[in-house]
Structure formats: C-alpha cells, structure tokens
Length: 290
Length: 129
Image (cartoon, rainbow over all chains, first blue to last red):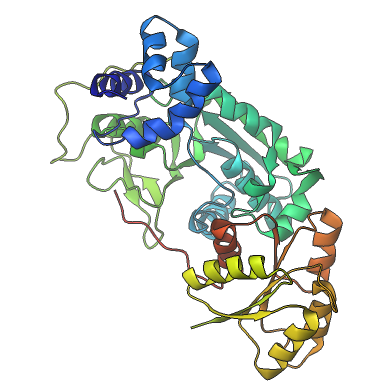
C-alpha cells in the first residue's frame, strides 16, 4: 500500500464512519482489507483503492464495514455484566417499579454477543423480572454484522470465548459445528442499522446504554458530540456503560463516573459540552456517512 | 504457582497444552489416561485438571466420577478438552461434575477464557485511553 493509498483510505473512513486512524495503522488496514480484496477479485489494496476512486459505492460500503467491524465475544470483559446484574438492574427495578419497563440500547451491537449476553443475564435473573417489559435494541453501522446478529448463529470458536458452558447448554441449539441462540432470546433483541454520527433521537429514550469499544475509533470532537447526544437520549437516572479502556473523564461534562464501578457512568444533566482543556477543531467535523 | 494436571493420551496434544498452560503461569503435570491421573491426584490434588474424554484404560468421564468421590476430590477445577463436541456429552460432563468444557480444536485464547471462567486465572484490565 502506498502512502497516498493510505491517506485516501484514512480520509474515506473518516468521512464515512468517523473512524479516525492514526498514521501508523497500515497493518490494521491490511489485515482487514486484504481478505476483502480477494473477495472482490482484485490483487491488493492499491487496486481496491483504484476501484473506489473509479466510483464503486458497493466497494466503499464494504471497505467501511470491514474496517469498523469490531472483535467481540460473549460477556466481553465480564465486569460490565457484573455491574449490570448487581448494580444497574437492581437500581432500575427499584426506580421503574411503577412502569415496570426498561429500555436498553447496545450502541455497537456488532454480531450480537453483547445484546444476547444481556438477554441471558436478564433470563438468569428470572423471577425478579417477571411481569416486566425489557426492550433491547442493538444497532450497528454494518448491515452485515446485524444480519449475523439477527440469525444468532455462532461458530464453535465464538461460543467458547466468554460464554460459560452452562449457558451454552441452556440457551443454544447445536447444529453440527454451529450453535444458534434460542428463539426466545432472539426475540428479546431488536436490530437497527445506525451510524452513530447521525441523529439517533428517533430511537427514543433509554434507561441503559452500552456503548463499548466504539468511541475509541473517533476523534475528540466526535466523541464529545456523541456523548452529548447519548446523554440527551437517556433518562436522568440511567446508566451508560463504556469499554474497559474508555472514559468520559477529561472529555465531556455530560456524564460522571459511578463511584467504584469501572466503566459505569451516569448523566449529570449538563448540556454535554467539552470540558475545559479539550482541544477541539475550529468547528465540529462534518457529519458524514451513508 | 498453581498446578494443572493434563490428562491426555496424545503426546502432541499434551505438549501443546503444556506450552499454553505454562504461558498462563501453571506448573504442569502430565498423565496419559484416567488411571494414571488418579495416581497423581491421590499424591496431591492439583488446582486444575485439563481432561480429555477418549483415552485407553480409563476415559475422562470415569476419571471425573472417581475423582469427585475421592477425599478432596471436589477441589480441583476440571475443564474437559475433547473432540466429543455434542451437547449430550457436554451435559453428561456437567452432570458428572465438570466445571467447564472445551471443544477441540482449541488454542491459547480458549484455554485462557475457560480458565478465567472458573476463576483459575485473573482478567487483566487495560489502561484507559
């Protein structure tokens, strides 16, 4: 891949998905796009770039998908799911006792491991949730991963990462080397294609938002902007869950860390502007995308 | 250092398992079949056992049943590691007292994930970005 090819891809990804690659991510592009080149029947990344420059929206879409599809697995990082079981849901059961409903958004639902992990956690809580209406909305930029999520079908390798064997036996059906999550759990999760750079207010207001390991790809302006909009899409006493390596601290005043629970945040009620000291570009980056 | 007993009749798989487990910080003991493994456990109970199913002399399932009836035999975390990938075998193993189950082929990531699952190794927390 030549430096101009790299620059072209960087700019394209930034414009279409907000993905902000630093100058040294050639390896990432190669590992994701070489398989795609083969699939498209071209010899390598330079040729792929040529096709995109020649005007091929379908290849552009596939490149964006390939680059933004994140690795995920069931109960990834464990701790957020312990917070969910031990802190978030008990608080919500008390706070929503009147209306008996909880709305959850997985903002980077990817291939479904996260929303289905939440669905399994809820099932495991059993009686406490009897008579409650719990909605789980999984969104992702990529329609390809959403399709996989909807099908609920996973390889033997995928079901062995993070998923306790008891839950595999309890909630999955085996079909040769593949495992499909049962229809009851599939029915608990709704899927929508969504670019976080675009307005998402139409999804409504949520009590709990999981937004893990996706904001790391955005630049600071975009992060601040998304945090502000996430806060406006949440109940004031709701919970935001970020990835293990992510934080709002030093970025936005819209959320504050929940004491002693890593990765867990609550809205502050502030408007969601950048905290002093964050260097922002002169104007918020153009919100582009499909 | 925690000890892991690898019960497996294939010397190639034992070697691979040993390498992975040593990278995960375990002291590794090997046994070629269930009877061999029971002798090891009578001497001293390991913290972890990585257990094949199909082996000559005594298979993994029968070893597990014997182990769980021995004094102190409920202590070790037992993780099956087998080509028996059917749900009936998995259910049988759990009922027999297995803590986790790895379907072959396996790699370091799967072993690490399963050992985390049963509390044999800690999860590392990444630094904030």
